Length: 230
Image 1: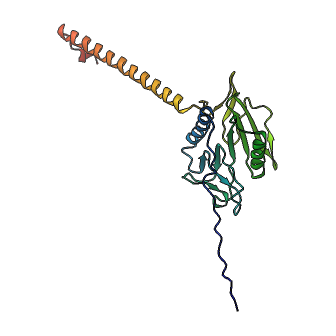
Image 2: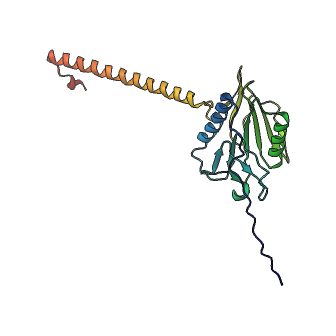
C-alpha cells in the first residue's frame, strides 16, 4: 500500500517586473508629477490609495496577469506601503483611475495590450499622456467598456474632479480648487517666492515699527506723551 503526500505549491507574485520606471528624464518627471499631485490631493483621505509604478495583480493564482500603471488611484482602500497591489487582498477593488505616460520605446502593440487589460479588469477612467507632444487622451467606462472621451479640453474627471485644460503647448491638469499640477521643482520655486514675499512683508513691518518709534521719541523730546493719544 502506498501513500502520496501532496505538496502545496506556493505561487509567487513578484514585486518587480524588471522594467525601468521611465526611459528618459521627461517621462520620469511627468510620472512623478502626476503621482505626487494625486497623492497630495488625497492626503487627508485615509480611504484613498495612490501609487506609482506598482504591479497590480487582478486575478489570484495568475501571477502572469499583471500591469504596473505609471499612476493609479484606488478609492475604498487604506493608505499604506505595499510591494504590489493584489486585488483579492484589497476587497476585490480594482483601481478606478490609471494614468500612463508614453515613452519613445512604447509600441502600438504594447499600448493596445495595456488598454485591453484596463478595459477587461474594471478601470473606470484611463488617461494616456504623451509628454513629447503634450497631448492627452482619455477613456471613461460606460457600461462594460471603456469609451473614448471625445474632447479632453475642459474635461473633468468624475472620480478625481481634476480638470484637463489644453494650453498652447500641452494639456495641463488642475486640482478641484483650481491650482495646477506642479512638479517638485515648481513647488519649491513657489515656496521660495512665498518665503521671499513673507520676508519682504516682515521687513516692511519692521521699518514701519522703527519709524513709529522714531516719531514717538521725537514727540517725547518735544514734551508730548505719544501714549496719551493711543
